Length: 280
Picture 1: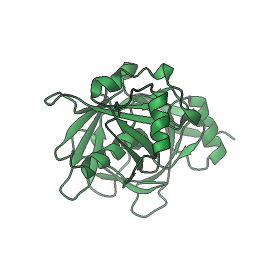
Picture 2: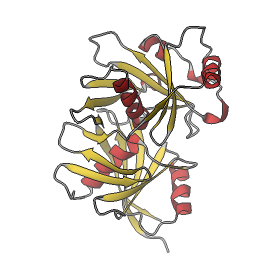
Picture 3: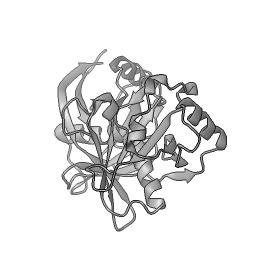
Picture 4: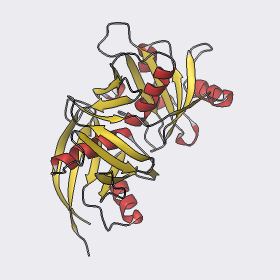
């Protein structure tokens, strides 16, 4: 028999409603099977849909499962912030003052509620050299001339990101995603710097992501991995803002804040757009 469950649809990483990244949140998902979750995520046709369950660890406030229309994810950034916002708006009470603790497939993730925006502690990121074969495939897929890629890296924080840095933010914006052909939607992550003194430090893009879209509007987990990469190379010493989604008409803003204890916080605005119930 179908059950009435609380439901929310939120917009993440933008001050402007509908200019961020949409997320569906099922707040009372206990009793749902994996098959039901996957089918509902496919039905919403959003980049991700999350399902909140009672905590499976004593420190956690809730457990979360994250699905794209075609698979379950270990971790994702905008689902983390969006779900925390929806849970709190629905009356969720934290076990720790000022801190939501989320349990997901990569473990416990802390979400700080004390600042101007919700911010999650960026998970540990493995940083490796991007193999030459991948680099050549990406350069060909983007139709880049020799020398156009400044640096590159293979980043892993649950999802895996093949990152290439171009000369500047404009070079990133100039890439025509409709002309990119990359095998099996393995994903290309792009970054380019804005001039010093600009409101945003970098422009990023996530082209042909594993969810099957042409381009993801705003990608919290990718930017979290990039933040660790910037920190490792000494390029993250003060808080900064990353822009994403510009070419899609979005105003995505990812707030990156390094802390003295070595952790990096990834924050953004969240707007509730739809609240109600579903029968499932």
